[in-house]
Image (cartoon, rainbow over all chains, first blue to last red):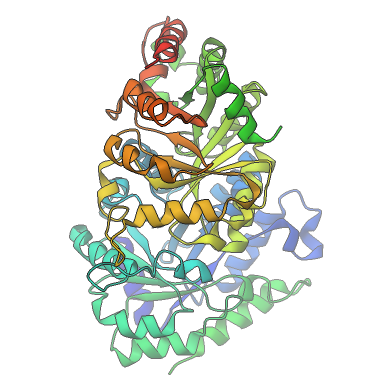
Amino acid sequence: MKAVKKILENNKSGKFVCVGLDSDLKKLPEILKNDKDAVFKFNSEIIEATKDYAAAYKINFAFYEQNGSKGLSELEKTVELIPGNILSIADAKRGDIGNTSEMYARSVFEHFRFDAVTLNPYMGKDSLQPFLDYSDKLNFVLVLTSNPGANDFEKLILNDGKFVYQRILKSVNQWNENHNCGIVFGATKLEELKSNIKDFGELTVLLPGVGAQGGSMPDVKKVFKDNKRENFIVNVSRSIIYKSSDSDFAEAARSEIISLHQINN
Amino acid sequence: MKAVKKILENNKSGKFVCVGLDSDLKKLPEILKNDKDAVFKFNSEIIEATKDYAAAYKINFAFYEQNGSKGLSELEKTVELIPGNILSIADAKRGDIGNTSEMYARSVFEHFRFDAVTLNPYMGKDSLQPFLDYSDKLNFVLVLTSNPGANDFEKLILNDGKFVYQRILKSVNQWNENHNCGIVFGATKLEELKSNIKDFGELTVLLPGVGAQGGSMPDVKKVFKDNKRENFIVNVSRSIIYKSSDSDFAEAARSEIISLHQINN
């Protein structure tokens, strides 16, 4: 199934929550910490507990790569646990010269078999082309990110009066010939979301920053509802997966995703 | 030893070549292709053959990650082969929100034990801060890249008449409190190199793009000599490591780095 269809169908069922599996060994519940497969077991229980309400799972490579080959082995096994009707996102923020990006695209889509990836646009179109060539996948290009540093360069003003991020948004719309592009737009940037949503075109939107970073799920959902627009997912990582640090962590994660799922403006 | 000192000392000995270990299983010499440790053995022979003339080795993660945990295991073993007086660079183009960049910095500097890393500035200062906090390491921030797509966003013109990449160059100079910052500046962008080198300050410069991408080693060296400036390395990947696809690949790589090393304008 084309990756974007997974989002559209989950949205139709009222599912908008993307669960971020930022699973850091140091933050896992005590009962798992001495297990040699702790991260994998944690992910396995979190996925099982949340899959009825999740529209997507997002795996940030950083949390796995820090443990080298062992970490990537846990990542490989985790991807296999994600049910086929739920979008799997490699949050890897890739972008490199052409022949290198080909390797990264092969890594993410063929080796790890993700449905989607996050991409960094700084190096321009040819640095992302190998990803865009996978027409059944979904490519979320960074436009306006959720962190404070988004002000440093993304919000520089160009000589035509537009912000850098707005120029990138325009380009991603132009790159969408295969209907496989999306954007990352920070849930913490509500005013910018309101003023730019009319230019999102048919792009799928991934909004990180709800929870620990301060973004609000009801606020984000309201903007999309007011604009009669679906085709989006809101990522929540720490406030779901670390809701409880006790043995009830999976139940607590389930309760949290249910309450986020039920928010309806 | 502080990473930047390795560059300065190698420069003093007339060494400016960085060897890019973009080792792709599909491009290895026939005699290695059926070996289960082909990439590691290839890297091992290339390092042995070139180490007398190399100022640095740069390892692009893409070529290893495409083989998942097995690939990272080969990467782990390769880093250990790099002699202590030669700079090791993780070409990973990282940059993410703060708590995630912490994991990436830990991965590159503590798990893999590289001396240096390449970073993507798009998400702003806080996305790179965890790397900048490692005061003995060296952080090469992308400024103007060697690929054609550098024109797409890096060369957008801001409302003060400067290019986006020039604003980033200015910021990296400001971030250099720990004297551990550098920049990536494409060797294919000779005119921009000439007109911006006066603003490089004390930043170490990594110049990719010589060889397969069309940049010229004599031209680049001449610009630095004309400006009475050292503290730079020029990366060459494919035209060294794939100089020969026969059993003499290591000797051919050695001849090639010697001829690049001897260029002196």
